[in-house]
Image 1 (cartoon, rainbow, N blue to C red):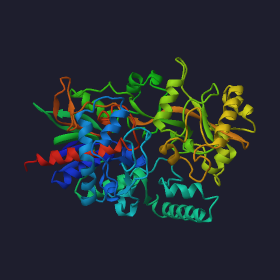
Image 2: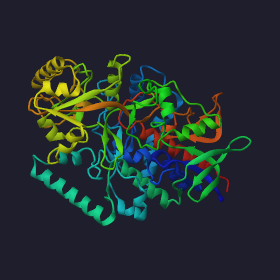
Image 3: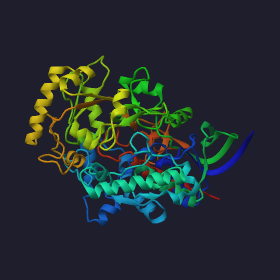
Image 4: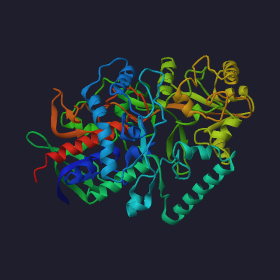
Length: 564
């Protein structure tokens, strides 16, 4: 059995990029259908921190942060090693603030300023804060029954399914054993979350990417956007001169969607084994790369684009948004990648390769961490490292999926996820690390920590490093000696938060063919679009910022062309 549906816009995928296009088009009068192959809405965005990098955004301006128009582009070109900015990057910088204003004024999407969040490499010229925003927390009850169609937070980094926002929220949890006020705050959050899970099946206080998607979903529903879940796209439909729709495989049978345009927004290829084998050297057999993106992100949109002549961009500096991960086996039997985004920069941690030597400034960005690991790994060896902490650091901040006090770590010791020993020598033997080198490394690092200066990797010298550390710790917020036994370690593997390489597009997000001409009726946004940063990672939020900006621009343009 099959049926036909006529719409102005078909959006394939329900992350922030696709929903931004859907909401914008619908608010401008378009009939919009969002097709999602999963049973839940939100894609990778729902698992993310929810940050957007939008230079000169209106929230920063309202705080009095006014930077020269040339400064963001100057920073990006310095980051991109002098590569010329293409028209898409200039389009993003021009229209990003407009996108923020549109959503603030017309939808349920409201933001918080991240004006104190520095760029990754703020020691470089023209780098500053004031370029980051994130979604305001959201009451999930506003979604009604749709709350249960929202992808829950990533299990490995949430606390029993409860998302914890950066900044003050997270600081209270880290300080819960040291401050009665923070202990009370954390207890109240946990109690409320537990009660909501018992009463409603999941927590309703939404933060981070979950809040962003919830706000976009509420806005889409209010604007009349239709959704078809459990409906992967089988193929695109083509007319004489353009893409005219798609065939969806739904639970009730095939659905032929006739559309004025199709937007591909399926989240890139982080779990496409064939594409990984082609693009990622350490995953040449399709294995060895462990992405923290949802397992369903398998390159569907990119393959759909290629099926009608779209071109995959292989020219980027890095094909993936690198991130250090550890592999966690859950009680359900599912194995997920835990992204190490927080604890690496805290006092009492360091990272070594199997040779026992440091290879990176541990407090630098997650992308830089893995880029350094790949560079330091000799050809022929499988890249991996060990993140090591002493007892004080583990109980204060946690280590990977092992939570800080008062949560016990014994279960993770039994599974082998976490290694522990009473001496560094014994820990080295357990982990297969060169013993003498590890002891020398820790001795040298401890001396740096006491002096408050890292002579080898300058950890703590940048504003970004310090922001990721612990402001209460002196003489450095990010350097702390590893002295108190037992010592702990978790194995770090090369992973990612998603893919950078994608379909070639122009500044209107139109997919380009082999002649670099636009394929009429076909657009790509989010991680299906090849990164406007050309595979560089200059700051947090450089995925969601362009994703929502181009989603907004596509929705606005398509609605303007509607004739009915």
